[in-house]
Length: 500
Ligand code: CO
Image (cartoon, rainbow, N blue to C red; front, top):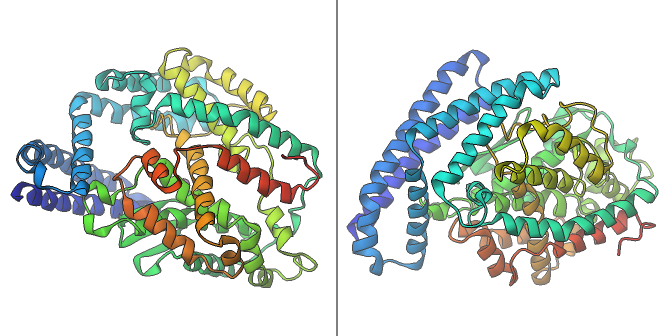
């Protein structure tokens, strides 16, 4: 078994390099003075380049030897690790070096132009660069090859094994259900959220957020929380996981739900099997499974009535005057308000998914050359009107709002919605096995955290998302669990709406 042991050791060495890169990037986003930027970019590029070339060289030598000489003596876990490594290696080998350079060049140019275009709210400034990026992504699908849809190639980078047709089917089942729920909610009397928009000093907010994170099971001995404009999670390795949050002193919901969301991502990373560091077994299953963990804590737990039944007394101490005469059910309503917005990241738990469907439909059509980049603003605005009844005022609050496409992240958006759907399905299963409502009311979140550790986090990337979901819940992704969850939750907030 000499080659396999050698392979594992070398992967661990490589992992040390990527951990160092992660720390450089964390520092860049959280602490670094502005003037450090250009040298930092060079440091990151050197180390990443070193990592890339060493991985290719090492896998090219050792992988075939292990596969040919040692396969039969290895375990199931080892086989899955090796299949993943083979898949990653074959993927990299199919893309010529000049192509990889062209994408990275196009991405930094597109990002630059996107910032400018968004500032001026003028899509025409960005059109050419975006078209260039789309053409490059189409080229990727040609290099890689595909059976059904070129989009499958791009989706696979974020959601291994998932097909465009499967995503389409999920959204088709979901769309009419969501429209029904939303129109019933729109006709019901709206909820009051004004009492929650009160000034609370930053220190008190911070302490409250850390208390919630600790109770969820985020391990501050193996992680920390800092401030940033855009909250994110960055893992140095599972024993050192960094999350960030933002603070709005007039609306504690900003801090709380950013902290809990990133905390969910962080708990996933802290739960990966450290014994396999460097191997696929110690990586996340897929982006949608990652997002299922953040959304599960954010929406299914911290936006539940039972969560607020436990936290209301502590919460009320933060702003006793405006919470006078209020109860947990008022906070529950105020944190679950449904309100259409043209901006995706301001979307609530329901309307959010229309933002994703819109982007998915446009991406899919672009990659299949059914539409042109020049058509995007008009198509975007029409879908916004059809789905959410919103008149988009300008490109900045429409087609220019996200940076994903400039970075070449096409096939990424659907993972956000899939994450919510997986979360609902996992929670449905966990609820069968444990009295979650009662536990939440008592402030006990560790049984749920342990369940997630055991069923999801500790499995790393050994299975695809669909395989994992089937093992846990007995079926592959089924959006009906999310629909049932949404009907149940929102019928409590909008009792006069007929949601069934
Ligand atoms: Co997230």
